[in-house]
Image 1 (cartoon, one colour):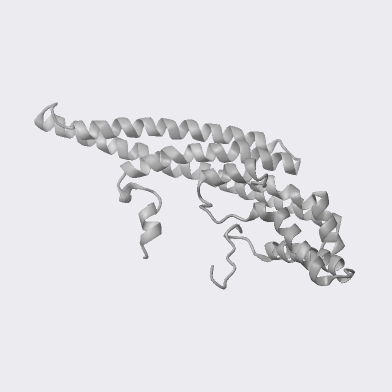
Image 2 (cartoon, rainbow, N blue to C red):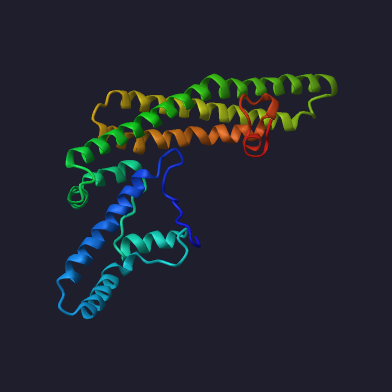
Length: 257
């Protein structure tokens, strides 16, 4: 962006140090290769021209000036250009110990092979434990806060509609009845999704190997967290802010107290 280099891939809680280490080492390796070739060339200008042409041809596939947010780019990058698309942490971290990366980092005395292996395992362990904590917190929030709030508001509506019908007849209370029906259905969905998430967490607790358990978190726990979130989000839209046990999205995004 102008004269700035913008880091878009680094997680919000992560340091850019590791990213910088990898970028700088990759640049150093490229400069080493160029220097080794050019320093022994009899015709420097000719060798430089040939090197530039060869490098552009070899790496032109990474140059893209279109819409990087379009799904069409993902298909072109992976299927047409043969580029990696590592979407999750368990997908990406094993590349720390890929042979060509180990060779590059050890050549420049940045890391040893054992240091790379340990960093891979430590980061995978941090990933699985962080999501595990988030999943347990989510489960607790859903069962101890959101479900009681949903059922309590449905009960309040039920009392209100019964009182109104007793006062003026059965023709009133259609809105409340529809809301009660929606909230009752959502409470069932929240409960069922919470049960599925708890089952997935029980299965995770029985696992010990870091890579496989991190992949299980990615493939089983995170999707079930998303499945639990959906009915909770839907319920939030139906319940008044004063009856919701947490700050609403609007309050979090736009409110300062």
